[in-house]
Image (cartoon, rainbow, N blue to C red; front, side, top):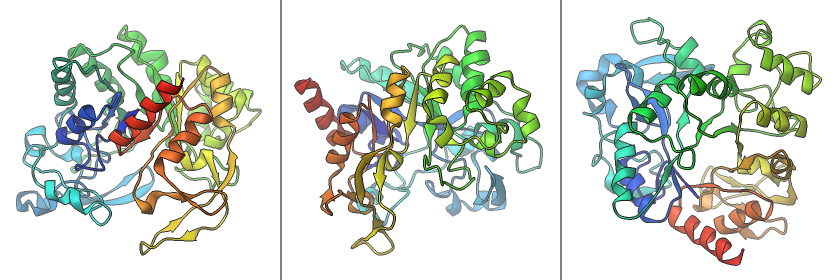
Length: 383
């Protein structure tokens, strides 16, 4: 059971308080998303844009750092982690990301700073002294942006490989036990580089997980339906890599650039992933628990509920047959995030967890680690 951004249903996400509570509630792993500071320190934020989860907009001294950048093909306005030193980041305080849905979490606004990866690992070491052996499941955010596409506020290229930074920091902290670390990414090239270059050069082996977005064959050609390093690249860039040529060949495709998550979910591609060193996949749960077209109105303004068909995408079974782990994301219990079953009855988060585990999932991400731990523990007792 992976605590998604910590116990983010009860504390502002990606804070030491959220991670600490998740550990207390029984998490097997805690999940920090990682972005770099201007001086090359990895910090835990879901996005490099800071105003959604911090009080940066209230700091007059940083007003001139507001800008608009293109991140994974989308124009984003705000303040960006790569334009701040760690010392400056440490003057900011965390805030609840979705206060309308989690108003109780706003009671903790302003109480915590933004943690570094090193501080998160220190928290895990502290938990060890209390008999809790918990792992870490970092996601490298926007790796292509940081190494190739992104620019600092002054216009100079960032040119920062966060995967190399991550492995180096894990080694410095002595936290490289493959039983206690997974590295995840939505970008395939990032994982291939880790498997074939970065980790071998560092004499380190950590299991890698490819996150997957939309799996529908009719999904639009977009960053949500394919790895951004495919979406944002030319065919010439991609076909220059022998592994990508072998992937296109396996899928009988002439263009690597048009390969999406739906293609990568096919059995032949799943076997290819295993062969190049990927240990697992992390599918979006809504792509696995198949939905009907249309939706059911919610009592919460602006939201709708999906209704399940009762059918499953074959990804979980096919991935397990290929020898891959399967860790779907993200299970949430608030009514705005829940679905109806195939008979039109509201489906609890725990019922969704059960369906995924029954289908063969080997783990799951949740914002509710206490409730997720209860499902996990009951499943272990029954097995």
